[in-house]
Image (cartoon, rainbow, N blue to C red; front, side, top):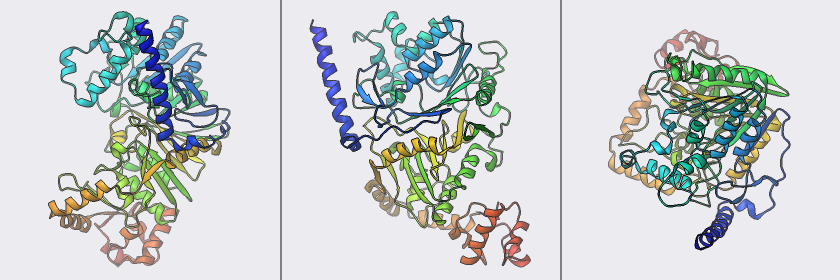
Length: 545
Protein backbone atom coordinates (compact mmCIF):
# COMPACT_ATOMS: atom_id res chain seq x y z
CA UNK A 1 0.00 0.00 0.00
CA UNK A 2 2.81 2.36 0.92
CA UNK A 3 4.56 1.71 -2.42
CA UNK A 4 1.30 2.30 -4.29
CA UNK A 5 0.89 5.63 -2.49
CA UNK A 6 4.47 6.64 -3.35
CA UNK A 7 3.96 5.80 -7.01
CA UNK A 8 0.68 7.73 -7.11
CA UNK A 9 2.27 10.80 -5.58
CA UNK A 10 5.22 10.54 -7.98
CA UNK A 11 2.86 10.28 -10.95
CA UNK A 12 0.86 13.36 -9.92
CA UNK A 13 4.03 15.34 -9.20
CA UNK A 14 5.53 14.32 -12.53
CA UNK A 15 2.38 15.41 -14.34
CA UNK A 16 2.34 18.81 -12.62
CA UNK A 17 6.04 19.40 -13.18
CA UNK A 18 5.78 18.28 -16.79
CA UNK A 19 2.76 20.50 -17.46
CA UNK A 20 4.22 23.63 -15.93
CA UNK A 21 7.64 22.92 -17.40
CA UNK A 22 6.06 22.68 -20.82
CA UNK A 23 4.13 25.92 -20.39
CA UNK A 24 7.20 27.75 -19.04
CA UNK A 25 9.43 26.61 -21.89
CA UNK A 26 6.82 26.96 -24.63
CA UNK A 27 4.94 30.26 -24.40
CA UNK A 28 3.17 29.41 -27.64
CA UNK A 29 1.08 26.88 -25.71
CA UNK A 30 -0.64 29.75 -23.91
CA UNK A 31 -2.29 30.73 -27.19
CA UNK A 32 -4.26 28.77 -29.74
CA UNK A 33 -2.37 25.73 -31.01
CA UNK A 34 -1.94 25.68 -34.79
CA UNK A 35 -4.11 23.50 -36.99
CA UNK A 36 -2.48 20.32 -38.34
CA UNK A 37 -0.98 20.73 -41.79
CA UNK A 38 -1.93 18.50 -44.73
CA UNK A 39 0.48 15.64 -45.41
CA UNK A 40 1.81 14.54 -48.77
CA UNK A 41 0.35 11.17 -49.74
CA UNK A 42 3.75 9.49 -50.15
CA UNK A 43 6.04 11.45 -47.81
CA UNK A 44 4.78 12.16 -44.30
CA UNK A 45 6.61 14.35 -41.76
CA UNK A 46 6.51 14.03 -37.97
CA UNK A 47 8.03 15.98 -35.07
CA UNK A 48 8.29 14.74 -31.50
CA UNK A 49 7.70 18.30 -30.23
CA UNK A 50 4.88 19.04 -32.69
CA UNK A 51 2.52 21.64 -31.20
CA UNK A 52 -0.33 21.28 -33.74
CA UNK A 53 -3.81 20.37 -32.57
CA UNK A 54 -4.32 16.63 -32.34
CA UNK A 55 -0.61 15.84 -32.01
CA UNK A 56 -0.82 14.48 -28.47
CA UNK A 57 0.11 11.23 -26.78
CA UNK A 58 0.96 9.67 -23.46
CA UNK A 59 4.65 8.90 -23.00
CA UNK A 60 4.57 5.09 -22.57
CA UNK A 61 7.45 5.03 -20.08
CA UNK A 62 6.83 8.10 -17.91
CA UNK A 63 3.01 8.23 -18.31
CA UNK A 64 3.15 11.94 -19.12
CA UNK A 65 0.47 13.45 -21.34
CA UNK A 66 2.21 15.68 -23.82
CA UNK A 67 1.93 17.39 -27.21
CA UNK A 68 3.98 15.94 -30.03
CA UNK A 69 4.07 13.06 -32.49
CA UNK A 70 4.91 9.69 -30.91
CA UNK A 71 7.86 8.78 -33.14
CA UNK A 72 8.26 5.37 -31.52
CA UNK A 73 4.63 4.46 -32.22
CA UNK A 74 4.95 5.64 -35.82
CA UNK A 75 7.97 3.35 -36.26
CA UNK A 76 6.17 0.45 -34.57
CA UNK A 77 2.93 0.85 -36.53
CA UNK A 78 4.87 0.96 -39.79
CA UNK A 79 7.04 -2.08 -39.12
CA UNK A 80 3.95 -3.99 -37.92
CA UNK A 81 2.85 -3.97 -41.56
CA UNK A 82 6.02 -5.79 -42.64
CA UNK A 83 5.51 -9.02 -44.58
CA UNK A 84 9.07 -9.96 -45.47
CA UNK A 85 11.92 -7.70 -44.27
CA UNK A 86 12.85 -4.99 -41.78
CA UNK A 87 16.34 -3.46 -41.90
CA UNK A 88 17.31 -0.90 -39.25
CA UNK A 89 20.52 1.16 -39.01
CA UNK A 90 20.66 3.51 -36.04
CA UNK A 91 23.50 4.85 -33.93
CA UNK A 92 21.88 4.11 -30.56
CA UNK A 93 18.88 1.91 -29.72
CA UNK A 94 17.24 1.99 -26.28
CA UNK A 95 13.47 1.78 -26.91
CA UNK A 96 12.07 -1.47 -25.47
CA UNK A 97 8.63 -1.24 -27.08
CA UNK A 98 10.22 -0.89 -30.51
CA UNK A 99 12.54 -3.79 -29.69
CA UNK A 100 9.57 -5.98 -28.73
CA UNK A 101 7.81 -5.08 -31.99
CA UNK A 102 10.90 -6.15 -33.97
CA UNK A 103 11.04 -9.48 -32.13
CA UNK A 104 7.31 -10.02 -32.68
CA UNK A 105 7.75 -9.55 -36.43
CA UNK A 106 10.76 -11.88 -36.47
CA UNK A 107 8.68 -14.62 -34.79
CA UNK A 108 6.15 -14.23 -37.62
CA UNK A 109 8.90 -15.01 -40.13
CA UNK A 110 9.89 -11.46 -41.08
CA UNK A 111 13.65 -11.17 -41.69
CA UNK A 112 14.97 -8.51 -39.29
CA UNK A 113 18.52 -7.08 -39.42
CA UNK A 114 19.97 -4.40 -37.14
CA UNK A 115 23.15 -2.28 -37.42
CA UNK A 116 24.39 -0.12 -34.52
CA UNK A 117 27.34 2.10 -33.68
CA UNK A 118 29.83 -0.06 -31.75
CA UNK A 119 29.88 2.31 -28.75
CA UNK A 120 26.20 1.50 -28.14
CA UNK A 121 26.16 -2.22 -28.96
CA UNK A 122 26.14 -3.22 -25.31
CA UNK A 123 23.44 -4.32 -22.94
CA UNK A 124 23.50 -2.52 -19.61
CA UNK A 125 24.30 -5.89 -18.00
CA UNK A 126 27.71 -5.78 -19.73
CA UNK A 127 28.82 -2.67 -17.83
CA UNK A 128 30.99 -3.88 -14.96
CA UNK A 129 31.66 -1.70 -11.87
CA UNK A 130 35.16 -1.12 -13.24
CA UNK A 131 33.79 0.19 -16.55
CA UNK A 132 31.28 2.41 -14.77
CA UNK A 133 34.00 3.84 -12.51
CA UNK A 134 36.02 4.95 -15.55
CA UNK A 135 33.12 6.75 -17.25
CA UNK A 136 33.27 10.47 -17.86
CA UNK A 137 30.65 12.58 -16.08
CA UNK A 138 28.27 12.90 -19.03
CA UNK A 139 28.54 9.21 -19.91
CA UNK A 140 27.97 8.28 -16.26
CA UNK A 141 24.84 10.44 -16.16
CA UNK A 142 23.46 8.63 -19.22
CA UNK A 143 24.27 5.28 -17.63
CA UNK A 144 22.54 6.25 -14.37
CA UNK A 145 19.42 7.37 -16.23
CA UNK A 146 19.21 4.15 -18.19
CA UNK A 147 19.86 2.09 -15.05
CA UNK A 148 16.98 3.86 -13.29
CA UNK A 149 14.75 3.24 -16.30
CA UNK A 150 15.42 -0.52 -16.25
CA UNK A 151 15.37 -0.88 -12.44
CA UNK A 152 11.57 -1.16 -12.23
CA UNK A 153 11.39 -1.84 -8.50
CA UNK A 154 14.00 0.83 -7.74
CA UNK A 155 16.10 -1.46 -5.52
CA UNK A 156 19.43 -0.64 -7.26
CA UNK A 157 19.64 -4.21 -8.59
CA UNK A 158 18.74 -5.13 -12.17
CA UNK A 159 17.27 -8.60 -12.55
CA UNK A 160 16.99 -10.74 -15.69
CA UNK A 161 13.25 -10.10 -15.66
CA UNK A 162 13.82 -6.33 -15.67
CA UNK A 163 16.37 -6.67 -18.50
CA UNK A 164 13.86 -8.65 -20.56
CA UNK A 165 11.24 -5.95 -20.04
CA UNK A 166 13.24 -2.76 -20.47
CA UNK A 167 16.72 -3.28 -21.99
CA UNK A 168 16.26 -3.00 -25.75
CA UNK A 169 19.42 -4.92 -26.67
CA UNK A 170 18.62 -7.75 -24.26
CA UNK A 171 15.16 -7.99 -25.85
CA UNK A 172 16.70 -8.20 -29.33
CA UNK A 173 19.29 -10.75 -28.26
CA UNK A 174 16.70 -12.91 -26.50
CA UNK A 175 14.63 -12.74 -29.70
CA UNK A 176 17.63 -13.91 -31.77
CA UNK A 177 17.69 -10.73 -33.85
CA UNK A 178 21.03 -10.51 -35.71
CA UNK A 179 22.95 -7.35 -34.76
CA UNK A 180 26.24 -6.04 -36.08
CA UNK A 181 28.14 -2.81 -35.55
CA UNK A 182 30.92 -0.93 -37.31
CA UNK A 183 33.60 -3.29 -35.98
CA UNK A 184 32.21 -6.03 -38.23
CA UNK A 185 34.70 -4.92 -40.89
CA UNK A 186 37.52 -6.13 -38.66
CA UNK A 187 38.43 -2.66 -37.37
CA UNK A 188 37.82 -1.03 -34.01
CA UNK A 189 35.35 1.30 -35.70
CA UNK A 190 36.16 4.43 -37.69
CA UNK A 191 34.05 7.53 -37.36
CA UNK A 192 30.45 6.97 -36.26
CA UNK A 193 27.77 4.70 -37.68
CA UNK A 194 25.43 7.67 -37.40
CA UNK A 195 22.57 6.58 -39.68
CA UNK A 196 19.00 6.66 -38.35
CA UNK A 197 16.86 4.81 -40.88
CA UNK A 198 14.58 1.80 -41.27
CA UNK A 199 13.49 -0.03 -44.45
CA UNK A 200 10.29 -2.10 -44.51
CA UNK A 201 9.58 -4.71 -47.22
CA UNK A 202 11.69 -2.82 -49.75
CA UNK A 203 8.81 -0.35 -50.06
CA UNK A 204 8.90 2.08 -47.12
CA UNK A 205 11.81 4.11 -45.75
CA UNK A 206 11.80 5.83 -42.35
CA UNK A 207 14.51 8.51 -42.08
CA UNK A 208 15.10 10.47 -38.88
CA UNK A 209 17.37 12.89 -37.08
CA UNK A 210 16.56 11.01 -33.86
CA UNK A 211 18.39 8.20 -32.19
CA UNK A 212 15.97 5.53 -31.04
CA UNK A 213 16.31 6.37 -27.35
CA UNK A 214 14.16 7.91 -24.62
CA UNK A 215 16.04 11.21 -24.73
CA UNK A 216 15.92 11.21 -28.51
CA UNK A 217 12.18 10.57 -28.77
CA UNK A 218 10.20 10.98 -25.52
CA UNK A 219 12.37 12.74 -22.92
CA UNK A 220 14.82 11.90 -20.13
CA UNK A 221 13.35 9.30 -17.81
CA UNK A 222 14.34 11.16 -14.64
CA UNK A 223 13.27 14.62 -15.88
CA UNK A 224 9.49 14.96 -16.36
CA UNK A 225 9.79 18.41 -17.91
CA UNK A 226 11.80 17.16 -20.90
CA UNK A 227 10.08 16.32 -24.16
CA UNK A 228 12.90 14.61 -26.00
CA UNK A 229 15.55 16.25 -28.13
CA UNK A 230 13.82 18.19 -30.93
CA UNK A 231 13.80 15.72 -33.82
CA UNK A 232 11.98 14.91 -37.04
CA UNK A 233 10.98 11.71 -38.82
CA UNK A 234 10.07 11.09 -42.47
CA UNK A 235 7.96 8.15 -43.65
CA UNK A 236 8.49 7.70 -47.38
CA UNK A 237 6.67 5.20 -49.57
CA UNK A 238 8.87 4.43 -52.57
CA UNK A 239 10.33 1.13 -53.77
CA UNK A 240 12.99 3.02 -55.71
CA UNK A 241 14.14 4.93 -52.63
CA UNK A 242 13.99 1.76 -50.53
CA UNK A 243 16.34 0.08 -53.02
CA UNK A 244 18.83 2.94 -52.68
CA UNK A 245 18.78 2.62 -48.88
CA UNK A 246 18.99 -1.17 -49.06
CA UNK A 247 22.18 -0.90 -51.13
CA UNK A 248 23.66 1.33 -48.41
CA UNK A 249 22.53 -1.10 -45.71
CA UNK A 250 23.96 -4.13 -47.55
CA UNK A 251 27.36 -2.46 -47.91
CA UNK A 252 27.51 -2.21 -44.11
CA UNK A 253 25.94 -5.62 -43.50
CA UNK A 254 28.22 -7.74 -45.69
CA UNK A 255 27.67 -11.32 -44.56
CA UNK A 256 26.24 -10.08 -41.28
CA UNK A 257 27.42 -11.91 -38.17
CA UNK A 258 29.73 -14.01 -40.31
CA UNK A 259 33.42 -14.76 -40.63
CA UNK A 260 34.29 -12.84 -43.79
CA UNK A 261 34.54 -9.41 -42.16
CA UNK A 262 33.39 -8.00 -45.48
CA UNK A 263 31.24 -5.24 -43.99
CA UNK A 264 32.12 -1.76 -45.23
CA UNK A 265 31.82 1.34 -43.09
CA UNK A 266 33.05 4.90 -43.40
CA UNK A 267 35.49 5.69 -46.18
CA UNK A 268 35.94 1.97 -46.95
CA UNK A 269 32.71 2.14 -48.92
CA UNK A 270 32.98 2.74 -52.66
CA UNK A 271 32.26 6.30 -53.88
CA UNK A 272 28.52 6.98 -54.02
CA UNK A 273 27.13 9.91 -55.96
CA UNK A 274 23.85 11.63 -55.09
CA UNK A 275 20.79 9.75 -56.35
CA UNK A 276 17.89 11.77 -57.73
CA UNK A 277 14.36 10.47 -58.13
CA UNK A 278 10.75 11.56 -58.30
CA UNK A 279 8.32 10.39 -55.63
CA UNK A 280 4.80 11.51 -56.50
CA UNK A 281 5.03 15.29 -56.81
CA UNK A 282 8.34 15.48 -54.91
CA UNK A 283 11.83 15.80 -56.33
CA UNK A 284 14.13 13.87 -53.99
CA UNK A 285 17.93 13.68 -53.78
CA UNK A 286 19.75 11.24 -51.49
CA UNK A 287 23.44 11.26 -50.60
CA UNK A 288 25.26 9.04 -48.14
CA UNK A 289 28.41 10.07 -46.29
CA UNK A 290 31.34 9.91 -45.91
CA UNK A 291 33.57 10.98 -48.73
CA UNK A 292 37.32 10.71 -48.70
CA UNK A 293 39.05 13.89 -47.56
CA UNK A 294 41.00 13.62 -50.83
CA UNK A 295 37.82 14.21 -52.84
CA UNK A 296 36.98 17.66 -54.14
CA UNK A 297 34.73 19.29 -51.57
CA UNK A 298 32.08 20.03 -54.21
CA UNK A 299 31.28 16.30 -54.69
CA UNK A 300 30.97 15.59 -50.96
CA UNK A 301 27.78 15.67 -48.92
CA UNK A 302 28.62 19.09 -47.53
CA UNK A 303 29.28 20.14 -51.11
CA UNK A 304 25.76 19.02 -52.00
CA UNK A 305 24.41 21.08 -49.11
CA UNK A 306 26.37 24.05 -50.44
CA UNK A 307 25.02 23.51 -53.96
CA UNK A 308 21.49 23.46 -52.54
CA UNK A 309 22.04 26.60 -50.43
CA UNK A 310 23.27 28.37 -53.55
CA UNK A 311 19.79 27.94 -55.06
CA UNK A 312 18.27 30.26 -52.44
CA UNK A 313 16.66 33.37 -53.86
CA UNK A 314 14.71 34.69 -50.88
CA UNK A 315 15.30 32.87 -47.58
CA UNK A 316 17.30 30.23 -45.72
CA UNK A 317 16.15 28.96 -42.30
CA UNK A 318 18.40 26.58 -40.37
CA UNK A 319 17.79 24.39 -37.33
CA UNK A 320 21.05 22.57 -36.64
CA UNK A 321 22.59 20.55 -33.84
CA UNK A 322 26.09 21.47 -35.02
CA UNK A 323 27.28 23.98 -37.61
CA UNK A 324 31.06 23.94 -38.05
CA UNK A 325 31.59 23.74 -41.83
CA UNK A 326 33.36 26.95 -42.89
CA UNK A 327 32.66 26.64 -46.60
CA UNK A 328 28.93 26.44 -45.97
CA UNK A 329 29.13 29.59 -43.85
CA UNK A 330 30.97 31.31 -46.71
CA UNK A 331 28.22 30.33 -49.14
CA UNK A 332 25.60 31.66 -46.77
CA UNK A 333 27.50 34.94 -46.49
CA UNK A 334 27.40 35.26 -50.27
CA UNK A 335 23.65 34.66 -50.22
CA UNK A 336 23.23 37.22 -47.43
CA UNK A 337 25.14 39.75 -49.51
CA UNK A 338 22.67 39.02 -52.32
CA UNK A 339 19.78 40.03 -50.01
CA UNK A 340 18.72 36.49 -49.08
CA UNK A 341 17.20 36.51 -45.57
CA UNK A 342 19.00 34.05 -43.28
CA UNK A 343 17.92 32.80 -39.87
CA UNK A 344 19.73 30.10 -37.91
CA UNK A 345 19.23 28.21 -34.66
CA UNK A 346 22.02 26.01 -33.29
CA UNK A 347 22.00 23.79 -30.23
CA UNK A 348 23.32 25.73 -27.18
CA UNK A 349 26.04 23.14 -26.58
CA UNK A 350 27.65 24.00 -29.92
CA UNK A 351 26.32 27.42 -30.90
CA UNK A 352 29.11 29.48 -29.33
CA UNK A 353 32.15 27.22 -29.44
CA UNK A 354 35.21 28.69 -31.15
CA UNK A 355 34.60 26.60 -34.28
CA UNK A 356 30.88 27.40 -34.58
CA UNK A 357 29.84 29.09 -37.80
CA UNK A 358 27.09 30.76 -35.78
CA UNK A 359 29.80 33.11 -34.47
CA UNK A 360 30.88 33.89 -38.02
CA UNK A 361 27.31 34.80 -38.93
CA UNK A 362 27.13 37.09 -35.90
CA UNK A 363 30.35 38.75 -37.05
CA UNK A 364 32.57 37.76 -34.12
CA UNK A 365 35.34 35.29 -33.32
CA UNK A 366 36.56 33.74 -30.10
CA UNK A 367 39.87 31.99 -29.71
CA UNK A 368 40.78 28.57 -28.44
CA UNK A 369 44.00 28.99 -26.42
CA UNK A 370 44.70 32.28 -28.23
CA UNK A 371 44.26 30.74 -31.67
CA UNK A 372 41.40 31.23 -34.09
CA UNK A 373 39.96 28.32 -36.02
CA UNK A 374 41.80 27.78 -39.31
CA UNK A 375 40.18 29.78 -42.15
CA UNK A 376 37.87 31.45 -39.63
CA UNK A 377 35.94 34.25 -41.30
CA UNK A 378 33.43 36.40 -39.35
CA UNK A 379 30.93 38.10 -41.64
CA UNK A 380 31.66 41.75 -42.37
CA UNK A 381 27.93 42.35 -42.83
CA UNK A 382 26.86 40.31 -39.83
CA UNK A 383 23.30 39.34 -38.95
CA UNK A 384 21.48 39.17 -35.61
CA UNK A 385 19.03 36.45 -36.62
CA UNK A 386 21.23 33.67 -35.21
CA UNK A 387 20.81 32.12 -31.79
CA UNK A 388 19.49 29.28 -29.68
CA UNK A 389 15.99 27.93 -29.11
CA UNK A 390 14.76 27.88 -25.50
CA UNK A 391 13.84 24.23 -25.09
CA UNK A 392 13.01 22.52 -21.79
CA UNK A 393 16.20 22.03 -19.78
CA UNK A 394 17.79 18.74 -20.79
CA UNK A 395 16.42 18.70 -24.34
CA UNK A 396 18.67 19.40 -27.30
CA UNK A 397 18.04 20.95 -30.68
CA UNK A 398 18.94 17.77 -32.55
CA UNK A 399 17.54 18.66 -35.98
CA UNK A 400 19.82 18.87 -38.99
CA UNK A 401 17.54 20.70 -41.38
CA UNK A 402 17.65 23.69 -43.66
CA UNK A 403 14.71 25.30 -45.47
CA UNK A 404 15.36 27.09 -48.76
CA UNK A 405 12.77 29.50 -50.19
CA UNK A 406 9.97 27.64 -48.38
CA UNK A 407 9.85 24.86 -50.98
CA UNK A 408 13.10 22.92 -50.49
CA UNK A 409 14.14 20.99 -47.38
CA UNK A 410 17.55 19.54 -46.44
CA UNK A 411 17.37 16.98 -43.63
CA UNK A 412 18.57 13.56 -42.42
CA UNK A 413 21.20 12.42 -39.91
CA UNK A 414 24.07 14.46 -41.39
CA UNK A 415 25.35 17.24 -39.11
CA UNK A 416 26.86 20.22 -40.93
CA UNK A 417 30.43 19.37 -39.95
CA UNK A 418 33.65 17.98 -41.39
CA UNK A 419 33.33 14.82 -39.28
CA UNK A 420 29.96 14.02 -40.83
CA UNK A 421 31.41 14.74 -44.26
CA UNK A 422 34.64 12.76 -44.09
CA UNK A 423 34.26 10.13 -41.35
CA UNK A 424 30.72 9.12 -40.42
CA UNK A 425 28.09 6.93 -42.04
CA UNK A 426 25.32 9.47 -42.62
CA UNK A 427 22.14 10.11 -44.57
CA UNK A 428 21.33 13.40 -46.32
CA UNK A 429 18.00 13.78 -48.05
CA UNK A 430 16.78 16.81 -50.00
CA UNK A 431 13.12 17.17 -50.93
CA UNK A 432 11.50 19.75 -53.17
CA UNK A 433 7.84 19.91 -52.21
CA UNK A 434 6.09 22.89 -50.64
CA UNK A 435 3.58 20.71 -48.75
CA UNK A 436 6.39 18.82 -47.00
CA UNK A 437 8.49 21.93 -46.47
CA UNK A 438 5.53 23.65 -44.75
CA UNK A 439 5.84 21.17 -41.86
CA UNK A 440 9.50 22.03 -41.35
CA UNK A 441 8.75 25.73 -41.61
CA UNK A 442 6.08 25.43 -38.90
CA UNK A 443 8.59 23.61 -36.69
CA UNK A 444 11.25 26.23 -37.38
CA UNK A 445 8.88 29.09 -36.56
CA UNK A 446 7.91 27.37 -33.30
CA UNK A 447 11.56 27.14 -32.31
CA UNK A 448 12.47 30.61 -33.58
CA UNK A 449 9.56 32.33 -31.84
CA UNK A 450 10.89 31.04 -28.52
CA UNK A 451 14.58 31.70 -29.04
CA UNK A 452 17.37 33.95 -27.80
CA UNK A 453 19.14 35.68 -30.67
CA UNK A 454 22.37 37.60 -31.02
CA UNK A 455 25.69 37.60 -29.17
CA UNK A 456 25.37 36.52 -25.53
CA UNK A 457 27.14 38.48 -22.84
CA UNK A 458 29.54 35.67 -22.00
CA UNK A 459 30.83 35.74 -25.60
CA UNK A 460 31.42 39.51 -25.40
CA UNK A 461 33.34 38.89 -22.17
CA UNK A 462 35.37 36.14 -23.84
CA UNK A 463 36.28 38.48 -26.70
CA UNK A 464 37.43 41.12 -24.19
CA UNK A 465 39.59 38.51 -22.43
CA UNK A 466 41.07 37.48 -25.78
CA UNK A 467 42.02 41.11 -26.43
CA UNK A 468 43.70 41.31 -23.02
CA UNK A 469 45.33 37.89 -22.85
CA UNK A 470 46.23 37.21 -26.48
CA UNK A 471 48.35 40.17 -27.69
CA UNK A 472 49.40 38.42 -30.91
CA UNK A 473 45.90 37.30 -31.88
CA UNK A 474 44.99 40.28 -34.06
CA UNK A 475 48.40 40.27 -35.76
CA UNK A 476 48.05 36.56 -36.50
CA UNK A 477 44.62 37.18 -37.99
CA UNK A 478 46.02 39.97 -40.16
CA UNK A 479 48.81 37.72 -41.44
CA UNK A 480 46.33 34.94 -42.15
CA UNK A 481 44.19 37.32 -44.18
CA UNK A 482 47.21 38.52 -46.16
CA UNK A 483 48.15 34.98 -47.16
CA UNK A 484 44.63 33.65 -47.59
CA UNK A 485 43.75 32.09 -50.94
CA UNK A 486 40.44 33.45 -52.23
CA UNK A 487 38.02 30.92 -53.73
CA UNK A 488 36.45 32.56 -56.76
CA UNK A 489 33.32 30.39 -56.54
CA UNK A 490 32.54 31.00 -52.87
CA UNK A 491 34.20 34.30 -51.90
CA UNK A 492 32.11 37.22 -50.75
CA UNK A 493 32.20 40.56 -52.49
CA UNK A 494 34.30 41.93 -49.63
CA UNK A 495 36.82 39.10 -50.00
CA UNK A 496 37.09 39.60 -53.75
CA UNK A 497 37.79 43.31 -53.19
CA UNK A 498 40.92 42.37 -51.21
CA UNK A 499 42.48 40.99 -54.40
CA UNK A 500 44.91 43.24 -56.30
CA UNK A 501 43.15 45.32 -58.92
CA UNK A 502 39.64 44.16 -57.94
CA UNK A 503 37.24 46.89 -56.89
CA UNK A 504 33.56 46.87 -56.06
CA UNK A 505 32.19 46.74 -59.60
CA UNK A 506 34.64 44.07 -60.75
CA UNK A 507 33.88 41.96 -57.68
CA UNK A 508 30.16 42.17 -58.54
CA UNK A 509 30.86 41.08 -62.12
CA UNK A 510 32.90 38.09 -60.86
CA UNK A 511 29.97 37.00 -58.65
CA UNK A 512 27.52 37.42 -61.55
CA UNK A 513 29.78 35.41 -63.86
CA UNK A 514 30.12 32.45 -61.46
CA UNK A 515 26.34 32.30 -61.03
CA UNK A 516 26.10 31.56 -64.74
CA UNK A 517 29.05 29.18 -64.82
CA UNK A 518 31.50 28.24 -62.08
CA UNK A 519 35.17 29.05 -62.50
CA UNK A 520 37.34 26.00 -63.12
CA UNK A 521 40.68 27.70 -63.86
CA UNK A 522 42.46 31.03 -63.77
CA UNK A 523 41.89 31.25 -67.51
CA UNK A 524 38.12 31.29 -66.87
CA UNK A 525 38.47 34.67 -65.18
CA UNK A 526 39.17 36.28 -68.55
CA UNK A 527 35.50 35.90 -69.47
CA UNK A 528 34.78 38.59 -66.85
CA UNK A 529 34.75 42.08 -68.32
CA UNK A 530 37.72 44.02 -66.94
CA UNK A 531 40.07 41.06 -66.47
CA UNK A 532 42.73 40.60 -69.12
CA UNK A 533 46.09 38.88 -69.30
CA UNK A 534 47.93 41.34 -67.03
CA UNK A 535 45.31 41.36 -64.26
CA UNK A 536 44.98 37.60 -64.49
CA UNK A 537 48.73 37.19 -63.84
CA UNK A 538 48.51 39.44 -60.78
CA UNK A 539 45.90 37.06 -59.32
CA UNK A 540 48.00 33.95 -59.89
CA UNK A 541 48.65 32.17 -56.59
CA UNK A 542 46.07 34.31 -54.80
CA UNK A 543 42.89 32.61 -56.00
CA UNK A 544 41.42 29.13 -56.20
CA UNK A 545 38.21 27.71 -57.64
